[in-house]
Length: 263
Image (cartoon, rainbow, N blue to C red; front, side):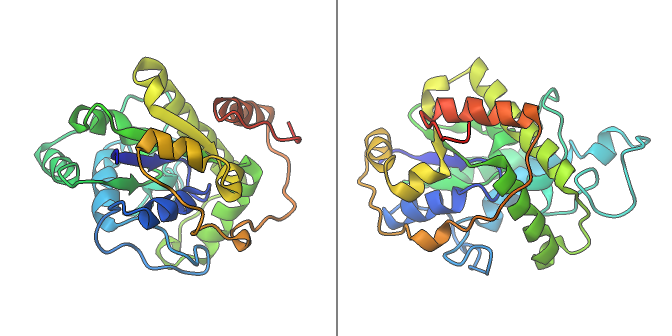
């Protein structure tokens, strides 16, 4: 059983991946967040791992880097996130993230000391380079994604209904921009190192179970489809996205060997 990290933008199917691995016996952390309406089977994340990544990203809050920018509005937003909001933080893909202090180092070393871990956090798209030096060479990275328009709509609903995001201001257009930045940052990281360690997975490949054999081989563990249920595929008619977003999505689909009819 190889250790792994689950990444991908929030509301893209990473919780389904986490649930499958949890059923296979992986350790996803203590005190996992409880289910709620948006994720009725659970999130498979915990405050310790999220907190490490929040610490890393805090230094790169747009409001800290560019305090006089016209983009910064009053209140909480991707430009000025509060604690727990940084899975939706605004970080340009050209910014190098390397923030490490003694507290972060201590917590990362503790996290990677556990056996059979599969940690899930959308923030890994940005923080992976900080974690990499402390990971064993055979650690696998699983990047989950789905149609960007569906993800954008789901994030918008989450921001409007989740209590911890109360007062957090974000538009669909800004969610789309952050979606692009997040995956572009991850793709750039893997161009530089370890491209063979990442597996790109479309959400529909998980729902159908077709990718479970491949993942079982890569992770050296038997994965079953028991956690998967059809009611996890909740889709509404979506607004179209930009050509830039569409191209990023096409690139991700190609990396996942997934060729949907819509593109």
